Every structure is written in structure tokens, then in C-alpha cells.
Image (cartoon, rainbow, N blue to C red; front, side, top):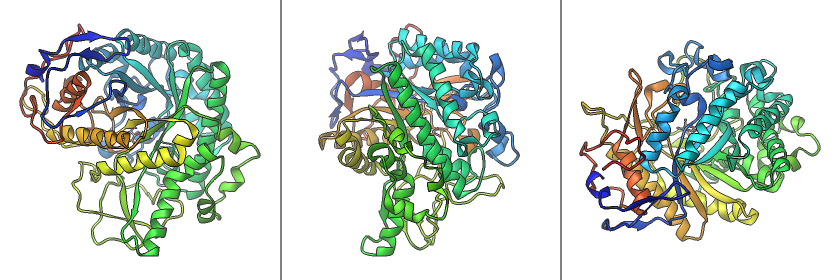
Length: 519
Ligand code: FCB
């Protein structure tokens, strides 16, 4: 990178991208459209720390992470990446990498402690952050809810209680009051499947409940809250770009000729993908899903008019993709083990899919034991566009994709992460394949900018393109960060395994506060 970037002529442009004359020709590289936005994502609880500072009170993740056995090694987000105090340096770092957009979330418990009245000091922090991003030419992409419900609201029923949807609107409007003139893209929820089913059914995430019925109630109320917030923000300002982020799987039957495997894959698709897509884009729950969960009380929570609210038109759909899966009706001999619990009772997140089992396919896996399957992303985007987003005129953005690997830093803290670099290139290539098939995908956010608090895994899993030394809080861009920076400047995507500087060569420099790319 260092050698290559020196002969790129760079001029900042208003979108935050660096326009350059790419005289670097990478053999076999694919062209990345100039209007395809490249950035990185984080979430409040995973990076901010400052647990009780400036009026913030506990969220369900504070409670959960302080519960013995809930998080690996007893890790908590009390300090995390200390981003609350280091946000300015982190924005400088993003600028030095040339990131065009930054996806972050606001903390409900910081803005409305205990889910109650507005805390101006909490909003001050997000205002400082957004102003720094704009000043750096980086477009802010704001997520209102990335899993951190104020604990006081959980004590009143959490997402199983309908009232929480109204408190969500209060909170969203408070954030909009402060930032509505500066932030264009607002997404309500990140991955409601995880909030509802990892949190209320599997017991693996906060608040740690293990009830299929509670998971379904939570899923409905999360979507109702989403719809109410979209309506409220749209009433305020029709120019905002509104939407949400869902996490998807691509469920393939192990044996497509075996009707039992086909039905098992159908259940997973219904209980992970279509349970959200159909209400949002079609104003109805899928009939087969309602049949699968008919004894679990979902329909008791659906009041007249709810589905119309949930189906309020959106502008953007955020797509989070890590991998798909092969699903069979019988348990496999060997399993992929990405479940985590420190001894607490957990169960399957799927409310009604006991006869659906994930089978390893012999694909390479990440440090999470997640299979690496870029072609699944192409198929997912093609399907989402054809069946949901396209007919609704909704733009697609990949809002998360990334890999944890067992990074080994050198003496200077640099990580030559060829595996992550190849992963990012392969997934960007999979997106370009979908674009070639006519799917309008507008951008890509790598998960994550920083190594951070990976929920129930604590600090044991590193997803960042920037290494964080948790003892010193020093940030060091990994080779994958420098590679992404090069793609942003050159708009050329090298083949996954091509060996370009600085892969394997620790020629990195600390970020230059001037905002120039490393030279
Ligand atoms: C997603 C979450 C994100 C991060 C990645 C690895 O499900 O949205 O916070 O944990 O997984």
C-alpha cells in the first residue's frame, strides 16, 4: 500500500471519498463503481465504554455482561474501546483510511437514561461525533437500536411489552431533535432477529430469557416499534432516508430431493428471514410461519393496524450477511459450534424448528466457526431484490459483513491478516456479482472498524480491520484496513488471494492526523 498509494493523486471530495487517478493496475482486478460507498460499522455498547458517565444508566447488556457465566471471561463493555473518550482519534483514523461512510449506533440508555427523559449530555456526545464525521467528509449512518435496551424498560417487560414501542419513538425523536439536520440515513433496528430470538428465546444474549413465546412477542414489538419510528421521522422530514438492518441466512436443504430437508430449510428461512421481510414489505406474516408457531401466542400480540404500521414504506434495507447454512432434518455427525454460554441455560433461538439441523459443508471457517461462503451473499442479494426490495423501490446496502480471526500481531502491533483481507475481497466480489446481475447495491460496511466487545464472546473474538490493544487502547490498522483503503482510492478490487503490498509486510504508519492516506 505504502508504495502504491504514493503515486495516487488524491483530492478530497464532498462524499468523503478520495478521488484519485488510479495509475495502479492490479492484475485481474474488478472495477468498483465510484458511487458504491465503502465504509465500516460499529455499535455503541461494543465500543463506547463510559458506562455511567454523563448520566448514562444501565442497559440490558450492562446487566447481562455483569451476570456470572453470561459472557466469556466475565468481560463487560464498561470500558470497551473507550471510544466515548477517543472518538476524535477514531474519526481521524477513519479519515486516514479514506472511509466514505461510518455506521454507528446511539445508546438509548445514554440519550434517555432508564428509558425516561432526555439527557442532553448524552446527546452532546453524539453531536460531537457526527460533527467530527462531517468535518472529515465521512457520511454518518445512524442506527437507533443495536440491542441495548435500557434495563429499566426490561424491568417493565422489555420488548415483550407493547409500551416499549412508544418509548422507542420518544427516544428516536430525541435523537432526531438534535441530529436531524445533519444525519440523512436513519435505521431503526439492527438485526431484530438477534434482539428477539438470541435475547428472549435462546438466552444467549441480553436479557437472557429462554422462551419461544417471548421471542415471538419481542419480534412483533420490535417491528411495531420500527414502523412507529419510521412514521414519526417521516412526519418530521420527508427527505430522510429511512430503513432498518436485518440479518439473513441462506438456508439450503442438505438434500434438495428429500422433502424433510426441504421443509427443515423452509422453517429456518421463515423463522429468520421471512418473519421480518414479509411484514415489512408485504404487510403480513407468512402463512407457513404462522402455522409453525401457532401454539406460541404470536397472534395474541397483533392488534388491528399493527401490520400497516410495520409496512410503512422504507427507503433502505440494510443487509447483514456472514454466511448461509446447509439444513437437514437429522442431526449431523459433526457440528459447527458457534454457540457460546458460560454455563447458563440456553436453547435453540428458533421457536419452532426442533427438527432443523445445521450441517457442516467442509467450507473454510472463521474463528467463530462460521463457514466462509461468499456466493451465498450474491444469491441473497439477488433474492432480496427480486422478491422484496426491488418491487418496493428500496435500495440495498450491505451494512455488515466481516470475519473474526485469531490475529497475531508483530512486535509493533501490526497484523498481516491475509485471511481477513481475502474474506473482504471475496465478499466485495460477491456483491459485484449481484450488481452484474442487475441488483442495485449501493454500499458496503465492513464489520467492524475496531476489534471490540463481541457480545457473549467478550473480547475473545476480533473482527476489526483495526487492532485494539485493550491494555493500552492503542489502535493499529491491520493489513485488511490498508487493503480496503486502497480499494476505496483505486476503485479496483484485487482477486482474493493476489499478493499486493502490504500483505505480509508491516510497512504501516500510524494514522496521519492531516487525513492523508499513509504514504
Ligand atoms: C452481528 C452484530 C454485530 C457483531 C457481528 C459480528 O450480528 O450486529 O454487532 O456482533 O454480528
